[in-house]
Image 1: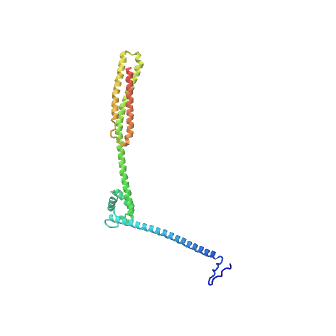
Image 2: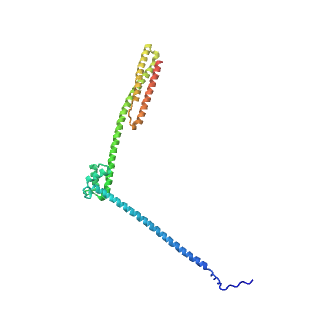
Image 3: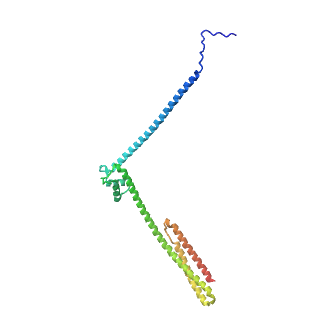
Length: 274
């Protein structure tokens, strides 16, 4: 069928030229890149300003803290500057040490301190040297505490020496007694050995006399051993903690020695009975 004729008044759509879309896209891309660069520049500037503001804030806080601290120092200094002459003299320093450090400073420490803080013989310690004064007072206080601790330690050590000497005296007495028993047992055993070697040539009267001699020594040794054991058990009393280990070792040694001698006496009695 023949194409219908265009109605009157219809307009024909204009034809786009080739390449027009590419031009528009390129322009849009350039604009976007410019916006991105501007945003990046703004972000960098913002970061820089933020860091700068943060730094300035920190500096301001430090200055404010320093100012507050300085005012505190000034207030504290003025509190002890009773005569308002802008320096702290010896008496005022002593009061300062006693009040703020609970420390009674000695004349010697005070003289040494002022010699260091006032090398030219100034009237007193100024505000600008107040921090150095506080440090010096603190050092003097710790030195005084060390002196007291050292004196306490030396007194404790001397007390331990005296306690150990007293305990050692008792240990030595028991040891001497047990040593005496050991000698008695040695003599008795020698008598028995000699008796056994000479028995065949001895008369019955001599044998009885020798046996009586051994019996007498044995009884004497036997009587001393319980006394020694009793003294071992009675040693000590209030023993300082630092000496307990040493004392227990010594006590065990004497107890074992007493038991050994006790067994020796028993063997000797059996030998004599045979």
